[in-house]
Amino acid sequence: MDNTLEEAKTILKKYNQEHLLNRFEQLEENKQKELLNQILNIDFDLINNLYTNTKKKIVNNNDKIEPMEYLDKYKLYDDYKYYENIGKSSIRNKKLAAVTMAGGQGTRLGHNGPKGTYDIGLLSHKSLFELLSDSLKEESKKYEVTIPWFIMTSKENNEETLEFFEKNKYFGYQKDKNIFFFIQGELPMVDTEGKILIGEDGLIKQAADGHGGIYESLVKSGMTEKMRQLGIEWVFIGGVDNCLVKMVDPVLMGIAIDKEVTVACKSIVKANPHEKVGVFCKRNGKPSVIEYSEISDDMAEAVDENGELLYGESHILCNLFNINAIERMGKTPLPYHSAFKKAKFIDEKGNLVVPDSPNSYKFEAFLFDAFGEVDDMAILRVKREEEFAPVKNSDKDGIDCPSTARELYEKFYNLK
Ligand code: UTP
Image (cartoon, rainbow, N blue to C red; front, side, top):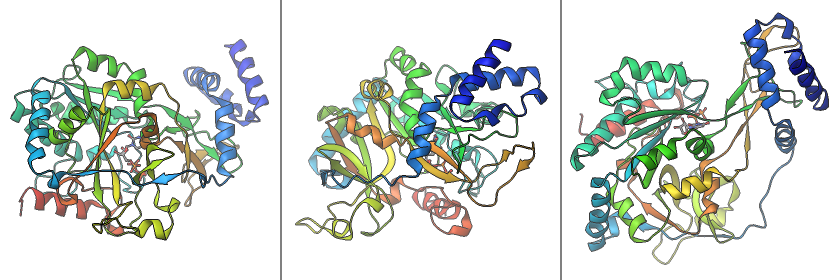
């Protein structure tokens, strides 16, 4: 261990992060080893760059932004059945898998535990995980198949998530046969001076690397390989926090197959031109999502000859990928964005600091930053009330919170 300690000291000196070993002597031996291992494996150049970027305002003013074509699911007329039949046949042939991203921290919701374990207050008191599993099983039944379910967790919530599934007997799924769990990547958190934080366990405080980490972790964890063994060609990827997420949609699949695109995404039309959501667009000729903060009022309000918003298709994290596209995206590094968050840490004197306002940066990749990797993408506009009931905030915020999601869910399923 002495050599490793010396090696770690040299690295830390180079990057001005020597404080990470301040309390090394007080740690148990296994923790000491883990800390050294973390130090040897962290890409300090990357962290330095990411920290430096937090000080710069990154503007993409020179990007050429154009509207992106989309299809409206309810204006497909005769084509609806045509696409649906193609999709149905592919599902019956066991070509579809579902992936749920459940590695987020859910800080806005403030639930003590993985977000998927949250009970939105339905009479049944089912958790988000159970609601998703109900819908997946219901769809599987229609096609007389078992659609395999892959769940992405983070290091932070993996154990609790697994315990929850174990306790609930995997909602009828069989672990490692038709339900699979994998852990996403993580990156260290840094304070406002660029110093990496130490967490309560005495180790480097790391946080999940964003939903954009999905591609790399699907590949690195061997999940895409597993999918190939199962004969999967299409992979629906969605979040854990939309209790109306429709993971199995033969129309979406039919469109992807018929149009020979490798990615097909769902959108819902913006509630109003200035709704604070990201919308689909073409950026320098490639598919992309543009944040509300990046477009001018004129662009936000512009309409086509039918009066439809030119930039009105919001991205709702409901996307279908061909497995080839995932493998390609998994090998392409994505940019990281920084988020300023509250994070507990151990200070230089060994005291636990519990901040009451944001104190540190977390670095995240966004799933849609990989869209530029493909030339071919289809967008399908669906109905908000049928497919989008997000649980982001707590009830006191009043929007995208448990009570609004519950209401939408009850209405859709006629529970009241
Ligand atoms: P959000 O971006 O809304 O974040 O995630 P969040 O972590 O749930 O909540 P906040 O921002 O801390 O309040 C959208 C979806 O992406 C998943 C989440 O679990 C959710 O399903 N996600 C997000 C991950 O799986 N990993 C991440 O690193 C981030």
